[in-house]
Amino acid sequence: MKRVLVILLPILSILTGCIGIEPDLSSYASGPAEIPLEILGELDSDTRQTLTSDPKYIALTFDDGPRADTTGRLLDGLAERNAACTFFIIGEQVRGNEYLLCRMASEGHQIGSHTYSHTRLTTVSTENMVEEIHKAETVLQSVVGKKDFWLRPPYGQIDRKRAKEIKTPMIYWSVDPLDWKLLDTHKVVDAVLSTVQSGDIVLLHDFYATSVDAALEIVDQLQAQGFIFVTVEELFRIQGVEPQAGVLYANPLKTRPIP
Image 1 (cartoon, rainbow, N blue to C red):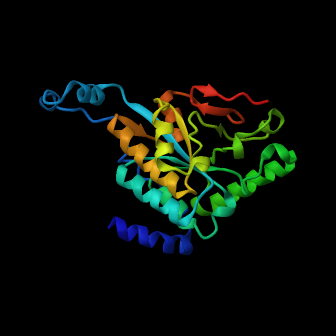
Image 2 (cartoon, rainbow, N blue to C red):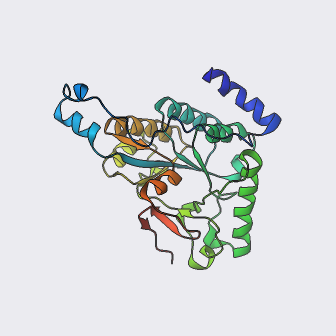
């Protein structure tokens, strides 16, 4: 049935868009289920500690998509692993890939804005910056409906004057493996696993096949360590932080200074 749904989504998105599709979050439980004592008694101490310790949450984020082949394969892998993430979408990438946004929305992922054309916001006028953001939000709304599309400024760059015009929270990152530069699955995986901690926001790019491979390997290894993959919005909620418009966050508990 799931395979049939994936096939039908492109057709449905063309006919009706995907406005009105609400994500099914029932499979994203807030923490692990209780483990029977008789099972715990049969496990080694390290495994028992992993399973009974406090939940560890992490947010994977992906920039520069969607792209039909790589983003589609990533969504397939995330669905198989029951992992949620956040996609910061470039507006001009949406045309022809609307069905991918429908999948993101229906499968419980968060959709954010990465502007319309990946413009470095500090190099354009405030008016042009506002237009870049508005144009991207208009495209996203036409597909998935009216939502708060949190902003990731291209290159993570924004200044104080322009930040005052931003009407949503802005998301930076706390772990950056430079996947776009390395283009090497194993190096990207190692870069993330060597530094990541609970509460981190990880920057990746679903535009590259090596990054998709790395992301799925990261999910596999960290889930085995007890990590739960959530959207950025869910991570803020779990940490008890109410994000503020115009503030640039490295993670829910740490803001990024704006020059």
